[in-house]
Length: 385
Image (spheres, one colour):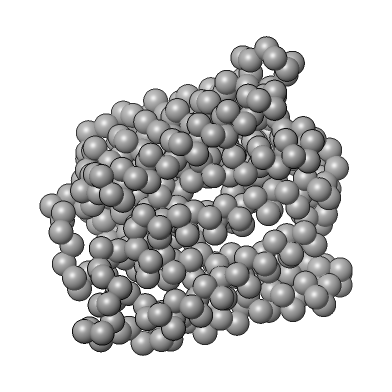
């Protein structure tokens, strides 16, 4: 995902002309049939107003929308693999940001209640899911299977450094500014934080993909063997993937718009806090990367798992917050970014534990269990505040 180098499609240092001298993976492997069909099903479901055909229609539209998300991420990875770094990382980041922002904006437009906190809840949920849920599962699965796993400390420390700065400036600082009362930024402060977030994310992408790429490669594998990764897709495959990517993103945006009233109604009807909606959005957007990270941990490639997880968290703040901030200023929407005291404690605890658990370059099941306990606590106090 954003800020990472997907294991399944990458050696981005390979020249674009490599296809002329090496055999290619079959087209059906690069572009599976389901990734080509589902995006068009999404457009059809929206045009047919599937979400308005009762409970079965809502469930069907939701399943198709999840399929569109998975297809969009897959095609973004194909395009990213072709264009190489650092542009490939930006393709992935922009695609996922469009998905996340479209879900947030759709719910803000159609929802009732305190939707001003939806962006904050979604970003905070993404951080907690990644830092404690995904990382915890990866450390636990890897520890159970391989007892002890290693990773390059320099890369992970760099990611945690930037993530801590982004999270504090975006989600904690609003509680302590005085230009506007409450957990809000003034318009000028909001734009400033948006710009700072973009600068931090851009600097991280530059370091990860260009200046210090070796910090983020598996230990002892500074030069990956050519056969570790699939060959770059052909120009034809890339153009097809780009076209279907656009359709998939359009399907996600349109289906999100039609499903948003039903999602909020279901959450409120179940007596759950509105913050649960943010958790659902974050979980949906992070689903593809979560699966990839867990699979990498099982194959004893913890460095790849951490790249995927922490890179996703960085992109969530570094791109989603600026996008929502601009929309808030332009449209005049209230945007509450400051976390409550309970959430700030969980955020601080997550960073402190991460510093210790990921501070030696080696992990066992103990660190995984610790992160998962924090994640379970976050979920529990979200449902039972």
